[in-house]
Length: 171
Image (cartoon, rainbow, N blue to C red; front, side, top):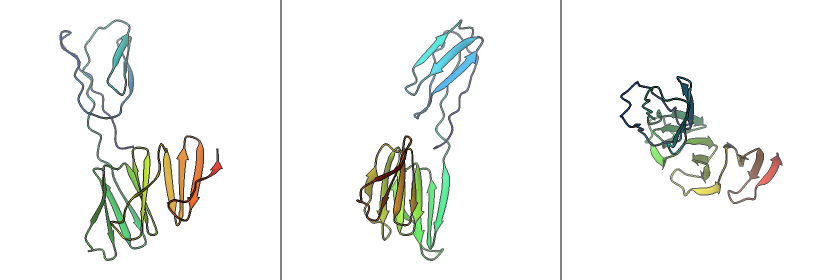
């Protein structure tokens, strides 16, 4: 996950409109004064039961995810959805590998990035071209020359070249 969504409730004037701030994925159901409120990913609101108070719904910008990976002489650092990687000496310069990513992994000479549900992998030197290897996945794992992906409840693995075929190994 990228971060957390925050829901803030305020009593307010009943003539006041709902205020929704932010731009992200959210889906809330909550109960106030015996009323059920649903707020979907497109901020559609619905209510059942009496409206006894006005609520202000605030969706905050997701908290920045910071993560890192060490793999042999490479260090990867993800902050604010920007991936930086350095290779070799600890004082080596950082190389910006990708922007707007949700997760990444390093394995030997490969780097895998997840953008939403799309997986791309590069291998070799830093700044090599990215190869999209899968779409609509729920998770991935790199290990040596293998790439594993989870699509729903289906686990598939490819071995060797980035363009090698996927082999379903479990369901």
